[in-house]
Amino acid sequence: MNGSSTTDDVPQSSSASSSAGSFSPPESSDQNNQAPAEDAERAQNIPHEVEREPVDIQDEDPLPQSDSHGHTTLYNVVDEFVLETEKLPVRDNIALDNMFRHWPTSVVQNIQAGHKHYVTIRDDTDRNHGGSDGDNNGVNGPLYFFGLNVYFAKCQRTGHYFLNMSDVFLARQPKVGDIILFKWDIQKGCFAMEHVSVGN
Image (cartoon, rainbow, N blue to C red; front, side, top):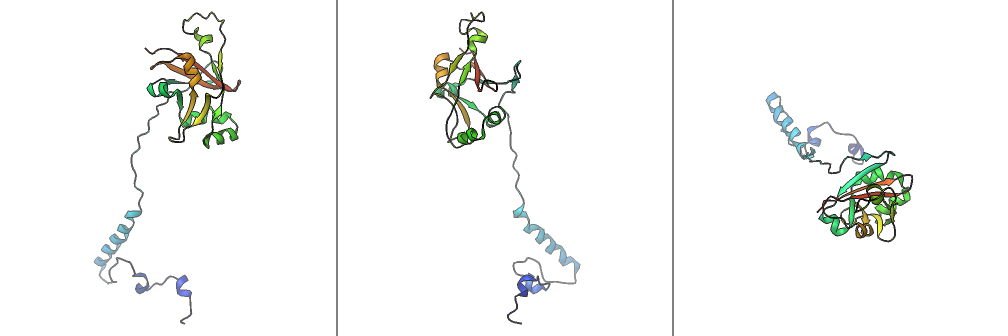
C-alpha cells in the first residue's frame, strides 16, 4: 500500500534497501568475494576509534608531612615568581585535601566563582625558631596577619589557587630559596606558617 509507514520502522532484508552508502559488492556465490566486503566494513570503524596519546604526569608537590598534633604541613620553596607576586601557589589537590574539606561548601563555591576568601595567617616563625636572630628562649609568641591583603583565592586566568601573603612578605622579607611551611590549622581555623630562611 502506498500510504503505509511500516517501511520506516521495519528494517528491510533486501540488498536494494541496504545498499545505499555501502561498500559491499553485489552478492555472489563465490566465497572469495565476501572477504573484501568484510574488510570494508571493518575499515568503516577506523574513524570512530579513540585516539590515545601518552600523558606525562609529574607530581611537583612535596609529600605532606604531619606534625606532632597530626596537622598536615606543606612547604613551598620561594622562587622569583612567588617573590614578585607575593602569592603562594596552592595546587588543586592540596587545596582539596587540606583546605576545602574543612571549609563550608558556600566558602568553596565563592572561591571557585572568583571571590576572595579572607583568612588569618598565624606566623609561628619567632615562636619556633627565634626569629631572624635565633634568640627566642620560648618567650616570643606568634604573629597574626589578617586584613585585605591576606586571602585565599583562585586565579581566573590560570584556574590555580593561591594564598596572598603581601603583609607576610613585607614583614619577613623572604629571599629566593627560602622555605615557607604552611598548613590549615583545623582547631584554630586559620593558616599556620613558618618562614625558614635558607636563601642568599
